[in-house]
Image (cartoon, rainbow, N blue to C red; front, side, top):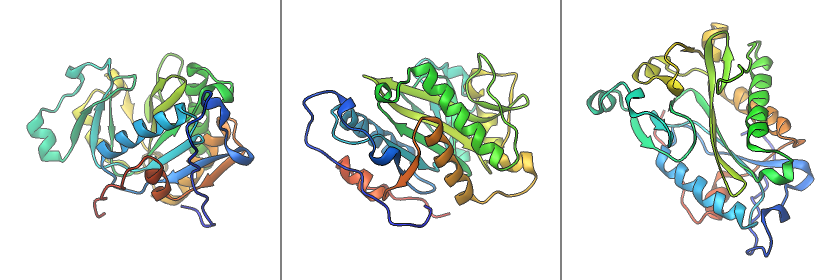
Length: 262
């Protein structure tokens, strides 16, 4: 997390009206770094709790950033046969599999990948679902550009691309106007783990990372900060205000999961 005193996520009594009654202070998006090598299951549960709080108008929009332990996630309309490695091979590689409630097909999360989960009420931002996805793409493209990587959106295809290779996946859920799930940007990801799936069901496309495109390592904290700022601004915020991860878990009545040592 960048230096500076973090501000807590504000928790309010249940609101009489809709989630539109709560907006971020000073045009800044509350953003929490949940850390590296974070297990998938507890963070998925955390998102569900935060969505309910946001729908009830009890918290502001909040943006979760983190890195996951290796995991494949299959969206609600995904095809199981796009998971190519069987359970034995996945166990050998240390990759979990979750069937989840977002849109899209199958994707991979793992070390070296910045994952973002914006929990946002779209109506106050003046966004529909399609415009929201386009804003996520724009923010990720801007973040890649900071490091000299020219990424782009491709009409009709999810995610963000460098040439014909995907550098960031996007898959969201929107329930009663509040978003969950989000995106994953490959920074220094082990791209071999994508061999166990057909990413997003697109068998004729490859995957890439910032490190592969640049031919050198990229500092994790720099990428995390760039993604936070550029995505927040693409969504219409002035920037971010960093809040402690513990405050996010406390708002949801949960405890932070144990993280795997790097």
